[in-house]
Length: 148
Length: 417
Image 1 (cartoon, rainbow over the protein chains, first blue to last red):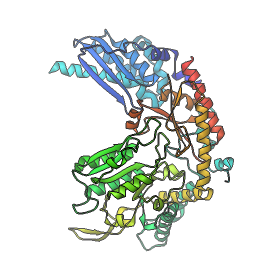
Image 2 (tube, rainbow over the protein chains, first blue to last red; image 1 turned 180 degrees about the vertical axis):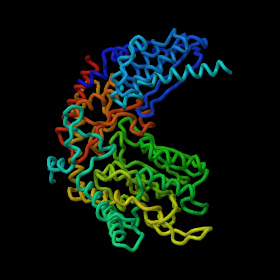
Image 3 (cartoon, rainbow over the protein chains, first blue to last red; image 1 turned 120 degrees about the horizontal axis):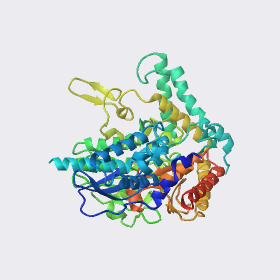
Image 4 (tube, chains in turn yellow, orange; image 1 turned 120 degrees about the vertical axis):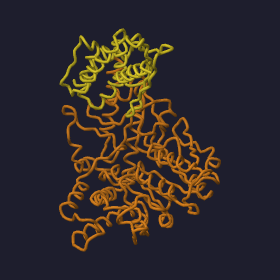
């Protein structure tokens, strides 16, 4: 059934047992992102030395897609260099916005490929991107903070 | 009371026979957002364009004459539908524009005008307003320095009127309330509020988007000053809304949109304006949409609003009682049918509304999920979103049963998987 292509087992698993969903104190940057169409919101704390993503922790409320997706990105980019993290986020965004043409590279996106099915549900694309865009925003804010 | 022949009504709405997501019957339970349109409305719009299209109130040719007659005929239909005089009915593009027109007119009014509003004056709304009846007043308050205050909402989803006479006081200039909450289904008791509003010399604005399409609303017997509603929620086309105001108020109220069609005389320096309704209808009007709305009014009147309302009451009662059998489900809003319309919001433990709406969609059931443009009300009920089913004359008990079965099936899918 079509519903199963959206709600992959791995997505529901992340939704029920989200990773890193507990804000760690003293972040380099904290961002809040809201999905204005449904009111979902997340707060995300980024710890970075400017070169490496040391930690990403978060809290929030939202649908299974937005919550699971934030769980995946927070686990996937920690420990990566800033450049690598941004490239990973771009790859995810490209997959989600491809309308189904790009099914994602598991070596790059890990559990993120489970969200490939979201691309066929335009109303849910924003949900899937919420945590990823928050991460991208936090990284970019930390970079400009470094330059100052 | 006569009951509705739903299968015959359904045949009037071509969209209701289409299939959704792999051959499911469409169960459309989102009429609170926008209603579907019967053939007679679509035909009226098409007929206007194919037979009579010309700019109303301009030109000496036959088409212009016919367009004017049709447009003004639609105004008469709407006026009689809400018990108004014909020159009190203004066509706007939407209910949102109607409310903004009042707010901007008040903001434009000079000192000395009864519409003038300034620091120290008060605007009263409620916590259950749709953003369309909140933000224009927030903005008016911000521009003028007036104070915005509001009625709270009780746990069972009713207006808390315990502080009625303190909230609406001698400083109050305007009270703007919804007739029926688009989230809770609550119908607000207006009599005492309107009485108090007039006692202090203020004006009463009613947001009737969720009421006029579903039951009889008579502007004169409600004794209100302004009403706003949209065409597309009452079987009419998008792009047309109504602003009604009492004649003596409209004649004094400054225009909001200015330009052609609303002027009496013009020089390079200044202009004088026509009386209502034309004073508030600048530009070539939305004629085909107004004519479509006229056809929608005819359709609703032929069936009868009393019959429609009692039909929706029956469906709502069945929906509430069915939904309440589902584990972990809470109705947000009144559960008794006293002063209650055909809108049912609910939450289920462990399932986000967005996920529930997605599952229901895969069974062919269209509901609304989200904050319903009533963010403060969501906060009041300590949630970010609800799932909402809303009923109209073309729904039947099969639709209600599909909803209840669908929600239970979705619950099993997410919670018991």
